[in-house]
Image (cartoon, rainbow, N blue to C red; front, side, top):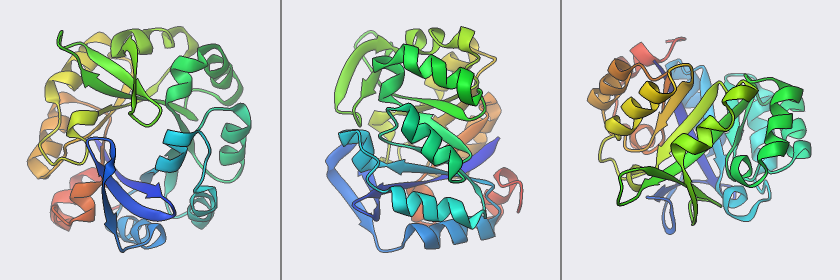
Length: 246
């Protein structure tokens, strides 16, 4: 299993939200550039960058920072938040981003997103589904930066892209994101059972090496972690098994 550090940008600053709430933001004094250098030095091969302004407003507001990070070439970037047009996908890929993460558009513009798979290939597109579990325990996809319920289950959202070559899916349990309460292992176990060919990326709740080991035991392809790494909750020795360049 690969560990992918996450950097969330809002207004040009590195932040973390608690359970997807834009009113519950923690700001960090470090810069995105400094974090990239730190994670690359630890041995990370990928970084996950989220433009939170873009996720909520539909405009890639932190583009200049993202492209500056990509230009360094130190690690590969997957970037999401506000990716709702072919022009944005092309712009990011042409400027060194390795993989573009598509969230709300996957539900709101499904036919257009299918076209992106054909144009750019399944390794350059990752679908991101942020979910909350309803009373029925069926994970329901949230859109527009987690603030709107779609009424679509995670399983239906993934299934509609299977025939398009969908390979990478990032799934975040919003209730656990930034809460350091442990990942939703049952959610990812179900996901792997239903769609074993998908390379699942688990996000939300990672707090320590035991959580990483539990996700690795499930056989998810990657764990995406932000707060635990920002707050130095894992030592270099604990990170090393999940950083291929360490």
